[in-house]
Each structure stands twice: as C-alpha cells, then as structure tokens.
Image (cartoon, rainbow, N blue to C red; front, side):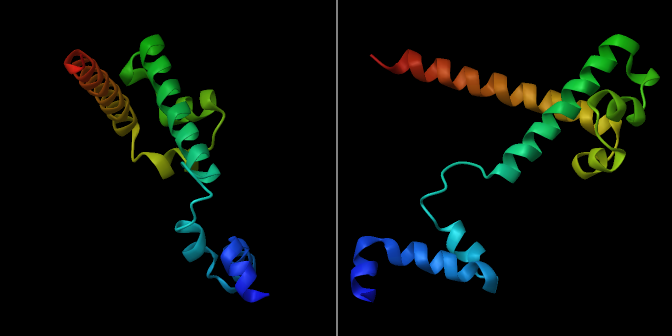
Length: 120
C-alpha cells in the first residue's frame, strides 16, 4: 500500500498531514508545488502595508507632511500604532516607501515597454 501511495502522489500529502503536529510542516510546505504565489499571510501583510502607504499619502496631500502624525495615519487606516511600527519606523519611512514603490512600478513599466518594442 505504501508503494502505491508513493507512486500516486498521495504519499506526499500524507507526509504533510502527519508532519503538521511535529513542527516539520514548514519543511514540506515550503517545497510544495501545490501552493503557488504568496501565502495568505503574505498577501494580508502587503495589503496592510499598502493601506498605510495610501493613507499616509492622502493625509500628506490634504494637510501637508508636517501637519500629520502617525496617530492620524493609523486612525484613518483603522489600524493600530503597533501595526504601523511593524511595517515602518516613522512617518518619513512610510512616505519614502511610497516613492520607492512608485519608482519600481515606473521602472517595471519602462522595461515592459522596452521589451515589447524589441519583439517583432
């Protein structure tokens, strides 16, 4: 029976299921081909980070950089101050993160346009 399971791909699933309680599940999950893309935790983390960045930029445009505080950002984003500090060290960091993200997006778009121009 074990040989049949190993050949059918079920052995891998069984190993993952058995390893969950033993602390070995990360080893098997990290190499698993069944989980493409970012995990749910990573997606949630990116969404929270983006929410903080967007809120900070909105407040900077409304009130100006010097008039806003971290408390203003977290109140508007409906997140705790601790969450802010998980992602950024201060309000300057969140504003620079917005510029870095914008720069990377523009750079990626420029590379895509350049590559499209090279194709026949």
